[in-house]
Amino acid sequence: MKWLSLLFLAFVLLGCQTGNSEDIDQSERPFIHSVYFWFKEGVTEEQKEQFFADTEKLRDIEVVQVLYTGVPAETTRPIVGRSYDFAVIVHFKDIAAHDVYQQHPIHLALLENGASLWDKVMITDVN
Image (tube, rainbow, N blue to C red; front, top):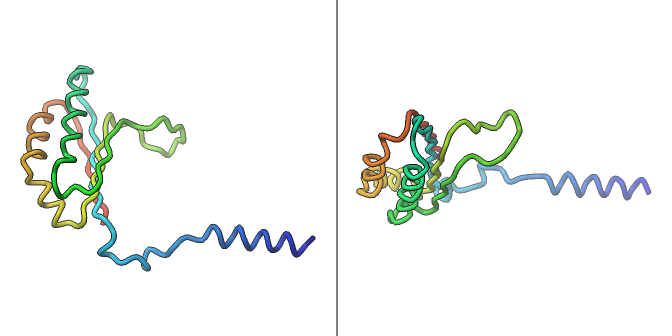
């Protein structure tokens, strides 16, 4: 019976191993652009809905590989930041694609049309 417990423990430990990030070819890793918005007081639900719809248009930019948009999840762990109102997460092939996105007319229109809605924006980029 003791050997069965040891075998189970070994199975669990081996199953919990994750791949080393150094094993992943850097060219396969996406450039991830995350943007968090805090809306001004008084922004209406209609204005928010229009902004949300406008962010979905970012999918039409040819260099966007993946786009996630949404409000904070209903997680309750104290360490999870939920103070923002809306987030946009975009995956690109590389930083060059990100740079194309930054100057794309759809992105620029979103910034121009939405800038009056938010008090604060926080951006993180991961490569």
